[in-house]
Image (cartoon, rainbow, N blue to C red; front, side):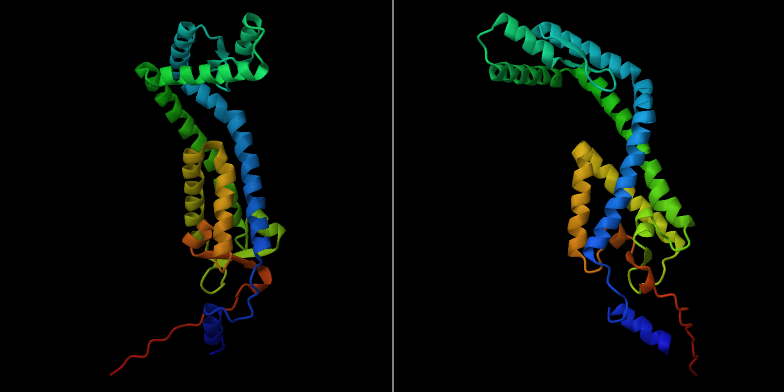
Length: 266
C-alpha cells in the first residue's frame, strides 16, 4: 500500500522528490555539450578533413578548374583558401592590386569593390553546371564525413558512458550528482532508454548542422535552453522525447515496484 501511495504521489508531483533547478539542468547540459564539442573538433580536424580531402580529390580538382577559369575571365587573383585546398578570390591580393592601380581609392572603397567582385564571381559560378556538379559531390562527401565525426562523440558521451554507469549518468550528471530517471515516476530508467536519447540527440545535431552549418553549435543550445525553461521537469528535447528526466540522486525512487495481482472473477 505504501508503494502504491508513493507511486501516486510521484505521478502527481507531490512526493518528496526535490525538483532540479533550471540552473543546474542547464549546467549539466552545457558540460555534456562542451565535452561533445571537444571530441567532435578533435576528430573532425584530425581525421575528418583528411578523409574529405581523400574521397573528394576529383570533386576538388573540378571545382578548382571551374573557379580558376571564372577568375581568369574576370582577371581576379585566386588561390587555395580552405582546409581542403579549394580556390577562392584572394582578398589581400585583390585589394593590393586595386590600391596599386588606383591609389586614390580609400580602404573602404577597396573593400566594397572586393565584395562586389566576390558576389559577381559567386553569381557566375551558380549558373555553371560543371561547378554545381562538382560542388554537389564535394558537399555530399563533406556531410557524410561530418555526420560520422558527430556520431562518434555522441555514441561515447550519450550512449556508452551512461550505459555502463550504474546510475545511467553522463559526465555532466556525474559532476553535479544527478541521475537519469523515467519522467513519469522518477524511478531509475532502464538501460534501453539510452538508445532513443542517443538517436534523438544525434538527429538534433545533424539537422541543425545541415540547416545552420557551424552556427548550429549556438542555435542548438539556445533551442534546448528554451525547452528546458518551458518544461516543468527541466527536460531537454531528447529527454522529453525519450520520456526521461534528470533529478538529484537523492530524489531517485529506488523502492521495488508493487506487484500487480490478478484476481479472477467467477
